[in-house]
Length: 467
Ligand SMILES: C[S@@+](CC[C@H](N)C(=O)[O-])C[C@H]1O[C@@H](n2cnc3c(N)ncnc32)[C@H](O)[C@@H]1O
Ligand code: SF4
Image (cartoon, rainbow, N blue to C red):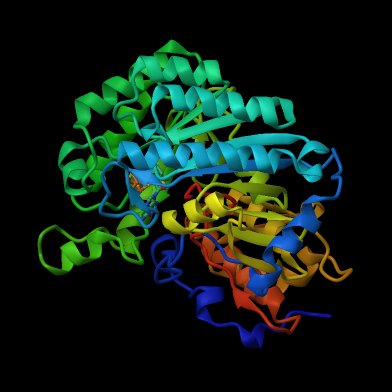
């Protein structure tokens, strides 16, 4: 058996260029590589979900819990994840429905017979909950789910209105990791993207929370935003270092869907965002900065300066670990099926009121999904290891993909070293494109009713980008 390279083209191979970092591919089109799956008929969602979760699970399998908070007080211009504007009443009603879903899902046999290694409260903006709600949420999770003793419990959000009181309540609720979207510290960049708070305010909050040393504080930075020149980005990185935050994600801006930025640029109201080549230069600068300051690289876009930062959710959810999704718009996967809860708040609330299923989409994973997941995890980590790649229909996946790896090696994207494929700087920048290329190559081996799954489902994305 061998992959058929004639089915592939430059979007998979890249092109030969003296500057692969900037020009091997034209642009990154999606934040995450997508697997493939076959849709399930909606009338089967609930019975299938019940049968998948009525079984006991193996305690040795790592798994995650993803809970979604679909509100933001203000919509950022670049974001595809925005769902609903936060108002106190909407948030309060949603919170009560969420606690009910937590209780229902915690009672499943599948839930109680396994161990959860990572919990992620994502959004939207979970820090738009009240301090009491955050504490209650943490306690409800700790009370209802079997968590590993070293379970990572992350609260995502923004520093805006994240008071000391809220931090204390979150810690009392059992959260032990905090991920704040900063995007850029620069005031002009922030204002143009409709981010709340100016540079000094955000910097003070991140520095203060980090200095307390109660739990790892991680920040997300974007590169490529309007007005975020290389000089501004360099200052963002310096600010991250000076803030004392324990870890950082560097995400390439990928604007798509209905993000307001596109329209604003078209109308000439703001400068356009950076192009791919400019973003590649920013990434190069970012990697150089981290190396210069001996900040440890955990994946192609994540760095830690403190040993407490393990980024468990990202690494576990990117393998073929199961993810139980809870909340409006949450996505996950159990027993070889992907699933997503209603994205519309109204549909979710009405399902919770009537006792109907919360699931709005379900699909059966491609039989090679474990292989695809191990590839995605490998590319994301910067090294694809022969020994951890799942087998493809009994064949060594690394061997099958070697012809493609060799093309990439000629293009300066990877180095083949025995049982390891190392991503070069250029390969790290294009890691999602490479993962997608490998998945497409393996897909030439099998046929069937396949559809590409949405790269924007929450939960077992990242995400974090979600990301
Ligand atoms: C779903 S958001 C939630 C974070 C939080 N609400 C905030 O605004 O800081 C998670 C992360 O996704 C990233 N993100 C959002 N839009 C993006 C885009 N268009 N391209 C790349 N990353 C994006 C941001 O870095 C953000 O911190
Ligand atoms: S970046 Fe965060 S706060 Fe801004 S719209 Fe997206 S999810 Fe909401």
